[in-house]
Amino acid sequence: MLRIVGGPLLFAARLEEAAAPQTVAAFRKLLPLRSKIIQARWSGEAAWIPLGDRDLGVGFENHTSHPAPGQLLFYPGGFSETEILFPYGGTVFASKMGQLAGNHFASLTGGLDLLPELGRLVLWEGAQDISFEES
Image 1 (cartoon, rainbow, N blue to C red):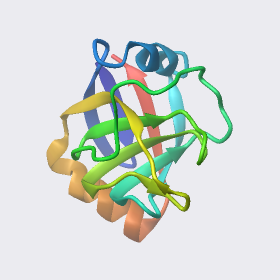
Image 2 (cartoon, rainbow, N blue to C red):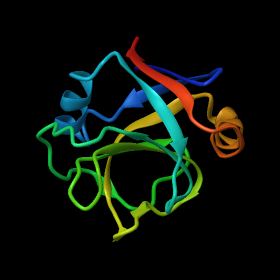
Image 3 (cartoon, rainbow, N blue to C red):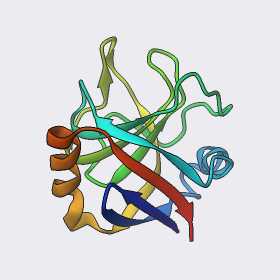
């Protein structure tokens, strides 16, 4: 399980080890992860955590362009920078280059009711601190 704190909000998530084992293993190497979460520019109701040119050595697995709210995606880079996408509403994962697909590696199990507030925070109040820890 993951403990995620985004701004003042607390979320819990299940790692999708069976569906995305390589991505989960690579993500675990980043833990504990502390960064900023910001409003996505092209993906709709989603926020993202930029990871720059970080190469975690994974390709596509369990990938989608249409995550449901609370289905976290890892994008391994290529057309856009490496990132984690955090959907809080209707999302089609994209960049200025067009539609992207990311690896669905974690699913929120706690705090789903807080997703609209996360969206409001990143949209109207700007970048928020975010942390991921395995619990």
